[in-house]
Image (tube, rainbow, N blue to C red; front, side, top):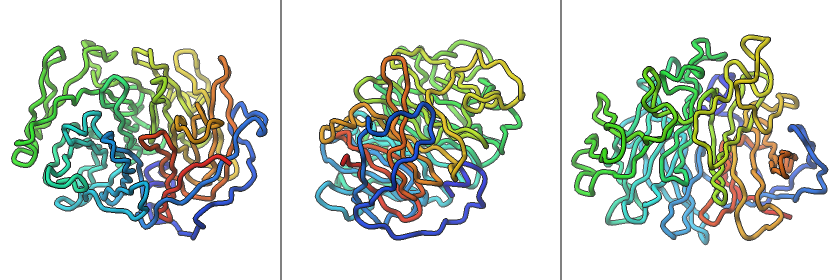
Length: 422
């Protein structure tokens, strides 16, 4: 399912699986990303198995509650967690328990999770082929179990096809919820939705969900909108009864004909993005069409509104039209082609753990089809990339835990690995 949704090239069947050892021996690095440097200047990495038996894992997240649990979402709607001293996956919730057909792609916990118990999911609603962001709550009786009946839709985005839905959710340093939405169309974005700021497709959205419903409403009124509008735009409401606030500082607020939820646009399928927890900078891994996979970068001080170019640009190459002016578009800071089997970029986290100083400040990303893993860093004004590993995995996510350690998911084998320096 992930390859179909990322690249729209496969038929969606489950790919062949293979067996990996607990510690993976990585093949020699063979740089194929832009601005490659001397491999000797980069750390060597390995991968250590920390969990297995999770069918088609799609996203990694952690709850900011001091529990040390690592949560793993799977496309079948189940969310699992593991503890640092126990590799056995424990089911947290199944969002398909009551309603079938939700393909789960993203997971983010409220910054106030320890007190409000809320978390958010990004899924493709099968019956409607629409992108949905929904809120859930942990059970007040058991911190290891969430209540599937507490489902509350927050946002729903119509799209032309069931492809290129994005998938990432993350709370930014500003406390707002950022949402990745793809161009929602077939290959080549024939309706040019990613350049149309009148809809929310091909964009990173930014909304405010800082005042979730009270505990008494969590089950009894799953679709009731109760967010405050103080100091924000009028509450955004939809036919299904869900609501959210749009921050007044969003770049298209007050502009007729433009979607005020948009923070940045011109993206094809931003499957993964992440914030550097130290600097607040934003990294966006955007899955390309046929020639380029790209990493886009946005400084923490940005006021939003960036146009990353799709479908006029694919990476630094003109796409449609074949001859174009790249001037109006923000170019990627790194890109790579589809040689040697590469097909779809999988972002990506900046390492901010304490165990491996040589990894500090390096953004780790990979490719879905080959399992190659790269590092990206900036020295002054120069961006450098270097291939760090070739795993052979079908990578579906690269995420981190509360301590800044980085993990990767093997989609085919249902395994989770921790990145270690050697």
